Amino acid sequence: MEFTDLRSDTVTPPTPEMREAMARAEVGDDVYGEDPTVNRLQELAAERMGKQAGLFVASGTMGNLVAILAHCQRGDEAIVGNKAHTFLYEAGGISALGGVHSCQLPNQPDGSLALEEIESAVRSDDPHEPVTRLICLENTHNRCGGVYQTPEYTRRVSDFAHSRGLSVHLDGARIFNAAVALDEKMGVGARHVVPLLAGPVDSVTFCLSKGLCAPVGSVLCGSQEFIRKALRLRKMLGGGMRQAGILAAAGIVALESMTGRLAEDHARAKKLADGLGQVPGLALDPGTPATNMVFLSLTPDVRSTTAEIIDGLKKRGVLIGAEGERYFRLVTHYWIDDAGIEKAIAAFREVQSTA
Ligand code: TLP
Image (tube, rainbow, N blue to C red; front, side, top):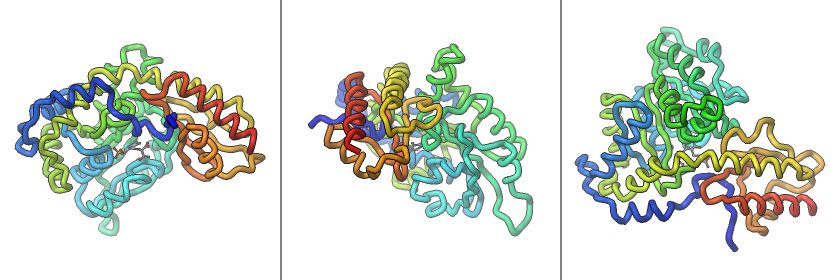
């Protein structure tokens, strides 16, 4: 059976153009800094983010970990959202491997951290307390519904951080989705929005292997000095990848030809939400979708369990993810076409009619 896989945009296999670029990629030993394709990807990534330098890493998780370890010493504190990917889904790496203490602030429904709460979370110079060193943001914010944060918000938090001698790291796994969504209002071209989101922060990671379809990898960007520090940490974590140009080649295609089409995924997510909104027993989250993610729950009258819904959809060739009890996430991407959206809506309708 061919599946319509809406579990995540991480499930995306590379495009034919990527496979071709991978086969043709010029490579060298990247630990010696001699892989021309990795070097080109890093330069291109830094340029897109408006930063001095980039570092190709194995995953978004590695990019965030390397960044946080580069900003913080053991025992320092990083302010994170209580729904941040770095806090919820990265195996506690910053504490386990870096000895970094996290201060968790509630993410607001729009994915932001309230500036007043950040201000009052910054520690005083008291030997009882850890030293606040870093603020971590996320854009788009996955667990808050794939919502985007604005350049103004990013600037406000960063200005505050810098005024207190703190740094800011942005988990911009889906920064291009944020830029595309923001540009609907700004109308300056999504490519010009990206540096407005990344410019105010000290470091940013973005993922090549989500909506952009590359098979592997993320890029961490920041100042030359920061990336030099990050390079040693990547090595320490076992992330020196030798002839990684094979992977970077797909990343270059991702940056050059896949960012411009993300609006299609957002439009299909909207179509999916409109269709599912008509199915009895489903309650869409308010405002969903903000980008390429649809979040919904089962209404109290539905007797089926989370597992039964997932199973029923799977039998009909549709895969979705559970984000909690009776709560689901559906993510659109390159490999989901209009027929896939129709199929998912029809499958939900059938499953709900037997629920
Ligand atoms: N997110 C995955 C899961 O881990 C939840 C997904 O399916 O969405 N930052 C953000 C905001 C992410 O959503 C993810 C992946 C990462 C970092 C980590 O990237 P990888 O999987 O490359 O380590």
